[in-house]
Picture 1 (cartoon, one colour):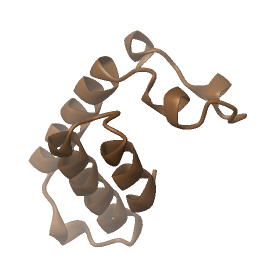
Picture 2 (cartoon, one colour; picture 1 turned 135 degrees about the vertical axis):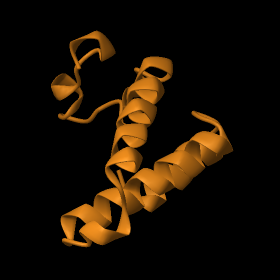
Picture 3 (tube, rainbow, N blue to C red; picture 1 turned 180 degrees about the vertical axis):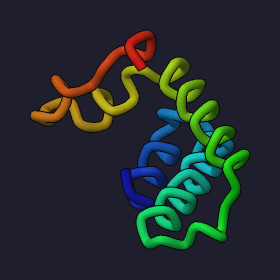
Length: 83
């Protein structure tokens, strides 16, 4: 997910502006990790992110499907209980 998709989903009221802020923060943490900026976050922040993502996909399991209904990636999604 990128910032544009995040904004579009929040704008379409697929999820709340608070969820949008959380997704933005998760994207930032992911970006720091991907670029080797390991001093920019803590293990506790990673644990909180994982907890938040799990909560998010439990509350919005079909979010991706409603934004990309014809996507070939839909079959790759797994229900929250399998994570």
